[in-house]
Every structure is written in C-alpha cells, then in structure tokens.
Length: 124
Image 1 (tube, rainbow, N blue to C red):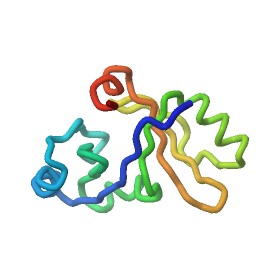
Image 2 (image 1 turned 90 degrees about the vertical axis):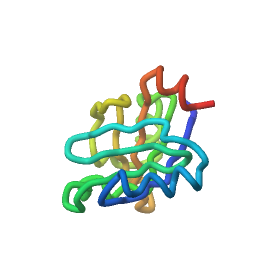
Image 3 (image 1 turned 30 degrees about the vertical axis):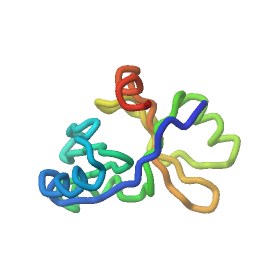
C-alpha cells in the first residue's frame, strides 16, 4: 500500500468564490470537481476545497487531511494493526472508496482509494 497524494482541506461557503485565488496560487485548474450529497468538492494542487453551508460540511469536519492510497483494504489492515479506530466505515463516492479513521493520539484522517482513471490522470 502506498500513499499517492495528500490534500490539505480547505472549508468554504461557496466553491465558485474560493477557486479563483487557488487557481492563481496553484497556477492550474482543479484536477476534479464533484458534488457529494449536499457539498461540493474540488481538488486543486494539494488542496481539497469542501464547500457548502457549515451545517452541511459538519459531518466531514473532523478529518484534518484527505489521503489518497493505492489499496484501501491494505490501509484498513495497517490501521487496525496500529490501533486506529474507523470512525466512518468504508463507503463509495464519485472518486472511489473511502473511510475515516482516528489514529492513536487522536488525529482523524479521510483515506480514499481512487478509481483507476483518477490515479492515471492526477497522480503524476
């Protein structure tokens, strides 16, 4: 299992207002943009912008980062071996499979195994 990419999470009320500055700072367009439930997400550079009303973003606010991994099953085994606790069981999104876990010491992280097309397109 390998970590393919790590995103710092940015919280925004409006994705369209948040993206212009990030486009300028990163010098690129978003690698992906999609809706998940009632929130909108965009990955641009090493940022994952999660946008929508604060109450709609709240279920995702516990995680400090989003980490893209090559194999979610191997990751889950490594987390269990280390004593981490899965706080959101495996589920699917438009980008692939994901879960949330709290590490020993308290950090909470979202782990995602992207669909192959995204790995080919975004991970360089």
